[in-house]
Length: 457
Ligand SMILES: [Zn+2]
Image 1 (cartoon, rainbow, N blue to C red):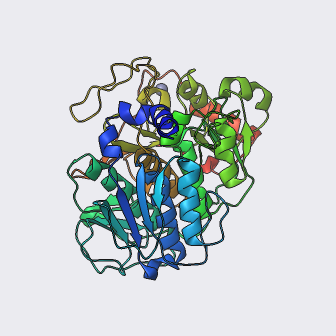
Image 2: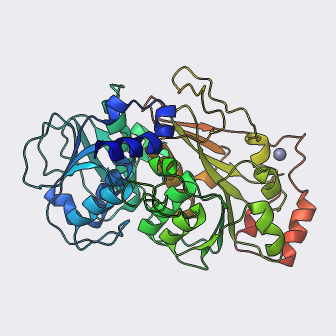
Image 3: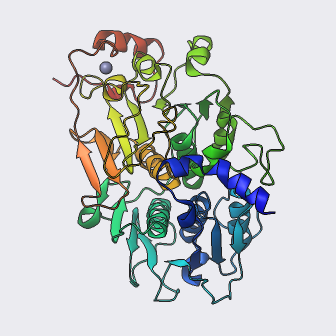
């Protein structure tokens, strides 16, 4: 069966290798150990299932040590209990994975070890915990607080844990860190403020259903959503190498259900929308939009590039545009665009056929100049998480307060972990509609957040 395994990884890991992943590092075993204290909590299950989801998109040999517990958190695939859910998630993402699941096994196979909760061995390399909206990674055992219900703290811990596993496998430096996506605060500044209710922002239009949108939908499924439904617009097809980072997508979505290309792949819109019972529209935005001219959504998220989409969306006259991106430099980034106070999406991130990959720490991408979106699973997960936290906390969202409008979350785990930035409006901008025209748009078809478009003077 070596042929099937090699064929799968050759195709699946194209973007991972492009981003600097090495086959020998991806073959190193990782061991995920769950304490019985957190296994029976919803937050602990959110952290575990997300960590398994992210780890199995890159690591090929995984040992799961999961105590018996009834399943409380929504899984990627149907399952009766937590251990089954974790193993089924791993196999759905990677049908050729080398996986062991004996909860009583003590042999660690020389693996990189990571523990969730307090009731785990104290000699593990990595430990995860969370309190409120704050997740934490430590490189030694700490008997911290393990919040039973927080989704955002648990999700953040999973992202930090997946980052640390990948870095450890590649012999890259790691430091203990803390991050709160609700507060947009890191390390000593990170408090425990949380948001516990579902995302309730009205009708959401998501343009682009790739890795960041998929992560957003994954987290939104765990947080819960209420309201008029989410529309996902994207004509692209799921390819196996997309499953290295798209949290809602399995090998089956790419047409490789058993590790071989036997089936017709689904569209990214379908493979993302299902997570929040959303509507999938298998069209490019510029094809879809003319038939939906009469419709405004409450929130518009531009999670695509190309085809001039950022400029076209700016010209809708929305009161607020939020989006998130990953970079070639190990950052996940949250962007705010309030008209006349911030620059517009097209000015901040111009479409470019030349990916900006020049960086000493980032990967070289000489052979695939057509794929500027290559990323690792935890980068896309972090970008989607920043956006999910911003939406969940509307209108108290940290990203709406103050002059900063761009946050860079550095998953090299450097210090500072989070860099806030400000981009003022550009006088040369030809995309932003004048205030009077925006008012006219809002008056004809008013929506929930139009009041955010205020005169800055
Ligand atoms: Zn502009």
